[in-house]
Image 1: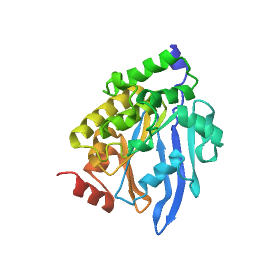
Image 2 (image 1 turned 120 degrees about the vertical axis):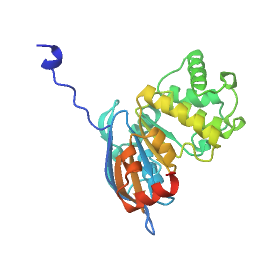
Image 3 (image 1 turned 90 degrees about the vertical axis):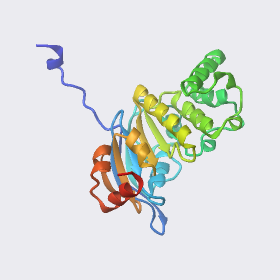
Length: 267
């Protein structure tokens, strides 16, 4: 009997399981009783109109807002299974600097503008224990190149970069430690269409090459169609539909999903 038949395949579990997630901002704003699973290597799109609660959801997962209720179970490399909202601040910081990444719509929120481009990338490496100056510069330069940024600009401050370049620098800063979980909030928002297209192409390749699991919040169904395996549709803080991206976009079942698809995607 072959070894493959003798040994059962390793159990595959969701990387992230969210249940009952609620954050009430009052007046019906926030998110309410949100539940989903994110599998290893999967890209999950979260869509909805402005005020649907999708950014609140991401802020809770990213540690920028404390939920009123719910839990988020994560399979970490460092500590094994953990419940995100119950983590100590020290453990949360360690995971945020190594296994997690958060890409903001406004790259200025995700970068230290007074620190050089190379310094922004190197800081995350140093948080993981790297100390050799030459190695830090080499790895930072390699990541600039990977994001199609000129490595000769390693010592320039992010404020000297264009909006699209800053966004790519923010992505390089997040991916340099090869995180397991990447949270992205409207990563192409506010960029010119040509810049958006190239950034999406880069993202698609990087996510697949690194085997990342991603929760991507966007109002742009074109971005979801290009990048996401599955999607959630939110309305007034609640998930009203979820499924494989192609299925939801081609045959939306909920009335809100139907309106969203009809208004944004061409027939």
